[in-house]
Image 1 (spheres, rainbow, N blue to C red):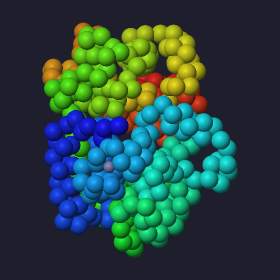
Image 2 (image 1 turned 120 degrees about the horizontal axis):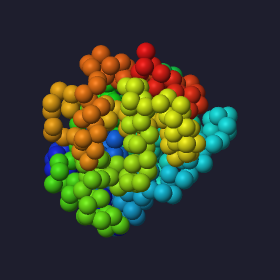
Image 3 (image 1 turned 135 degrees about the vertical axis):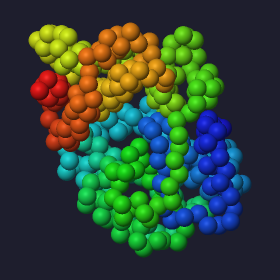
Image 4 (image 1 turned 180 degrees about the vertical axis):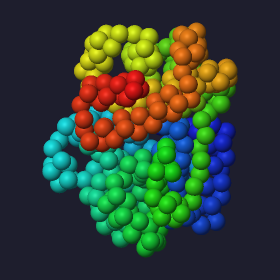
Length: 359
Ligand SMILES: [Zn+2]
């Protein structure tokens, strides 16, 4: 298996500076890879972990030695991992606490993703990490612990993590990845060396999407726009699912702007809420991207629209919005997130969201 290619120019530059730091043997104890969802933060972390422990290394991972192959295999966006994590989500909390979630395809590289229906990094995982941090590398040169979506650590876990960061262990680097680094406690952020991974440019996305031969050229172009420069999003984007989700969320916003019947909306929300694959998060991301486009159009900005293919429809809606309404709609997304954390039923949460916009 070849090493995962880093598609963005900026991503390759970051990798190059990391290799220089590694060569000078001054890799920091904590790195923070920040950037949009699916942009390649975890990929870069695995790339780094593999190269450091590569048989030929430390250098760019060769991709062929046992260390490289095992470390690079821990790609949680692969179907097999997705299934495994989805199964875990159904377990009762006590069962999950018995065996805290940590993925290890190589002894010295541990990955801690959010766990459970609430997608939280919990105290049990933080304790596992803390205990593991005390050990020395057993087969490689350096231990790399990757905490994915680090902003999802709850207060207890963040506290335990902070204690680990305060007592740097030799031969250990902790890589935090985060879409919203500003949600991390300042105490953790200030102990990390940050790298920001930006969205890929149009050309970089086009080059990347060449590998999705399963979809036609026209759809490929749309996928490139819809995924807003995130290869991970583009790779897993199901156009049909995307359109269904967009259609419903658009109906929700339209109804809230009094362009539709509330009763009709309830039926639509019910249908989408019944789909297990539709998490509130994905729906909230869709709403946020629609609101962003609406606001752009409201301001007369025509560039970088995510939903350019339905520009006319959005334009009509945009004529009926105001700053106040948009601000409320964005604020209410926070309430939606809080409802998700409290495990409120999807349908109820979405209806509450639509009602909040009608106030
Ligand atoms: Zn190798």
